Length: 179
Ligand SMILES: CC(C)(COP(=O)(O)OP(=O)(O)OC[C@H]1O[C@@H](n2cnc3c(N)ncnc32)[C@H](O)[C@@H]1OP(=O)(O)O)[C@@H](O)C(=O)NCCC(=O)NCCS
Image (tube, rainbow, N blue to C red; front, top):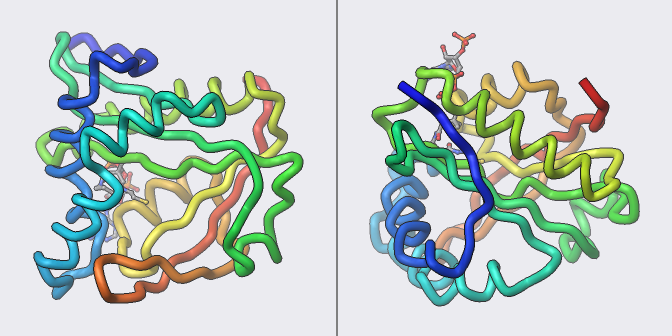
């Protein structure tokens, strides 16, 4: 299997929406209502949302593919931090957010996540940021374990709105250093 990563562009809107719609719910706790997941996807992960993200110079979206078939994506976001819980523990001037990191379920545990993370951190470093931070649901043990392996330490907590329900996240952060 050949794993490749590349920057997404405007030709990828439908592909990104499809990947995002298939994977977003995997990051939410058991018991999350499908209607809340659907509302989040409609509001933040539509093809139109991805058109906005891809047109924003402060964002970088990467796609991971296996033998040419897209199996995951990530999104980095630079800029001010609106969430006061995050602003307490992250310096926006020197940091970049890993806002999305999702892999199709049949590729979990395959090593693709590590490849996509390496490419994502390399893009993050190229922006000049010194740290990368993210939010992850506190009950998402698989992702928490993966991020811990990737050097992201818990530095705080925040809340995250899915549909009508607030979820509890960990804020994790790591330094960006050259290999
Ligand atoms: C998060 C994600 C990218 C990680 O990729 P992955 O291929 O699953 O990661 P890995 O298999 O390398 O690492 C996961 C670790 O969690 C462990 N794990 C698996 N299920 C677990 C569980 N239920 N509880 C605790 N740990 C678990 C695995 O054994 C592995 O640890 P190990 O390498 O020490 O054995 C992928 O699972 C994913 O896309 N999940 C759905 C979307 C998501 O949650 N994204 C994060 C949003 S913030």
